[in-house]
Length: 219
Image 1: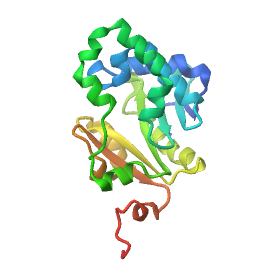
Image 2: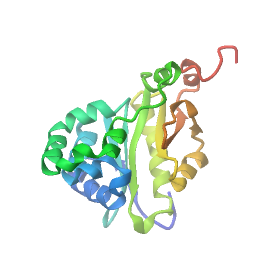
Image 3: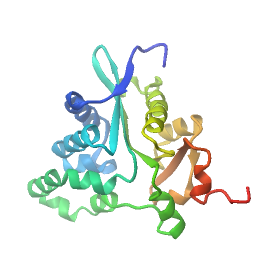
């Protein structure tokens, strides 16, 4: 933990939903985040899912003044189960803002998929492959070690939950976050790359790359 800041990292609960929603809304712009495009109510619904679903968990970095950082992870692919859990708020957003129906960026990001090759689908859908969904840190303390500490904490939590690996999709333009994953030893995986997103993987089980077909059985 960064010696210049005093904070603890723990699993988030329902009482943290409001604070996490606030931090999320302060951290992202509409053009870079689907929940923000859909509005605060939809953002809140996603965090409710993170802390109540058996498929996912969220961690928060907290000091005496409140939550300063967060990260959320699903034990597997998250797009469909989270979308279905938040479906009511999704339709509410469309009713309130009909222009969203014509927002091509929204639909492209909402249903973005890895490259459609057989190999990439096998990798993306493999059981035991957790996925980091979102991470955010208070803008006043970014670069102070909070996000790397949250990333490290996911390794311990996901291992306890039985995951074999964790993948994180980062926008290609987000160089600060990309540097965190590279420094922490996560492996860039081109097989999962999308038009605007690069993926990094941390293997909790060293045999998992071979199962995914990323390492030849002869090696």
